[in-house]
Amino acid sequence: MVTHDIDEALRLADHVALMNAGRLEQFGTPDELVLSPATPFVERFFGEDARIRRLSGRTVRDLMHDRTPLDGPDVSADASARAALALMLRAGRDTLAVTDAGRVVGRIRLADLGQT
Picture 1 (cartoon, one colour):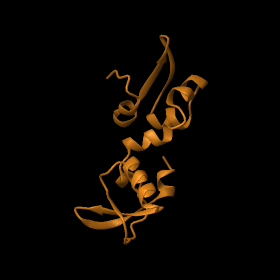
Picture 2 (cartoon, rainbow, N blue to C red):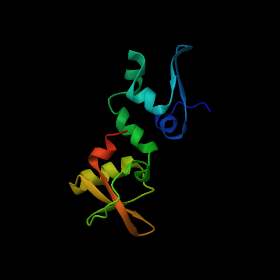
Picture 3 (cartoon, one colour):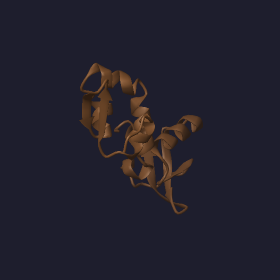
Picture 4 (tube, helix red, strand yellow):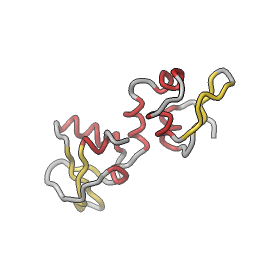
C-alpha cells in the first residue's frame, strides 16, 4: 500500500519504506523508524511527536502490563494508547483502570505508554 499519511502508515503497516527523492532512506517496522531513525531525514520526517503518533497504532491491551484492578477513570482495553494518554492528561492521572466489556481487567500507567 502506498500512502502519504504518516499516521496511517504507522497505524496500519507491518513495515514501512520511507523514500526521499526516489532513494530509500529506511525500511523497517514503524517502531524501528520512529525509535531508531537511520538518517537525519528520517528523524526530521517523523518529527518531534513521532512517539506520540506511534501510540495511535497501539491499543491499551497491547501495552498494559499490570493486571491489578484499579478504581478511578477508566479506558477501554481496545482504545488506542494515544486516547489513553489524552485521558490521563485530561484527568490529571498517571494511571487508568482498563475495562473490557464493562469489567475492570487491570490498569495502564503513563510509564507503560512510554515503552512504545
